[in-house]
Image 1: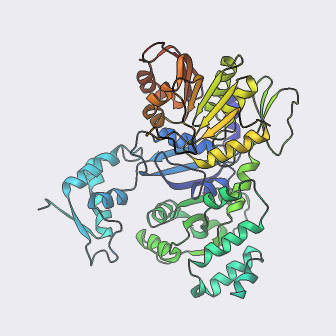
Image 2 (image 1 turned 180 degrees about the vertical axis):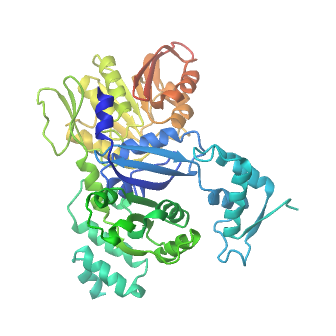
Length: 155
Length: 363
């Protein structure tokens, strides 16, 4: 009944919105407000839903959200764990990557850090089928592009 | 300086052209002054101070990028400083329909991105393009974000909602569809609680079944004040609403006046601080003062504040807890069951409301 009607009306996608929102702290202010408001999505419903679903993460962890807005102003969204670069920055304790990656190294991380980050990333919906080794390789690549060296052991 | 005064009265197109021509004149610190003048000259909204604090200025950027790199490019933009990236799917459909074969439209897609005001947009876009291997920087246009535009759009969405037979929630700017029903007039502003959300509905229905007349009601996490006001309309003797957000308190007191509720019947304050000495402004809430207590917040606050919420209820009082997803219900039940009996759960969609009566005696 209602479900069939839903499928018919929700077929057409109006837009795909990508955002970074701190876990449990979505508010109808920029950037959430204008990004969703433009497509006439119910801001409060999204904030409440998002906050409820991210209660299990540490507060204020920046979560990557992808929202699919449909033409009838309804929406669906998926939440991903923070980007690899955020984890790397947090693990290394730096705020920004290097200004000249490849030439200038900001700091170093050990392979143990890489392994821990890879384990968290594997719980992401998109990485679940990737072998841990390839996730690690991709993390090392990202670290290199930020000017962070990976060494076997930190002294 | 006079050039800027001239510009703010012109439509956006001209503003953009000026931006492209004279990029070196742009400095981030100019933007706040222009946005302030924009917000005061636009149509008035009910909470001028609220809009100023929540409607912070932002940069809205339209980028034309090749279709095949849209996804990696959006992700890269987010990594390099964009607050949000939106890809319009509309344009794709139009291309398929029109067989005109205009090369520009079919190969490129328009991305709308939002950046914080003091972000270096050009550098961010070029870094993002570099990181995914694009040979040239995509064309883009920067505009000052029209903050009132999305606020008004959001308000337009709010329509009269029928919660149950003869119970309606009506926005301030609409007349009630059913005049004889119990109509609660609301302007939620930026606070939560328009009656549309399943949790609000669950709590309102619970309230309707509990309030017989003359009860003292506590709304913990009041938001727009909808539950507190509804309780009074159902016949409660007095309502108290508590929220940690001062904007919510403002919104709730505005709604109280909209519904002609005198101040003695509805008290609103920020949560009582841990030390008992009253700050003078906040009237401390007495323990065991209320017959009905409802907390519609989120899992973490509800778990942390459990002792608090329970302490304000009289023995034998009914306590309702919502804002919880059904998967989170076991945790909440476990936390509250030592103190509550006759626990019952109501569900709408994925949201639940748990209610029970407080055990008498020592808790």
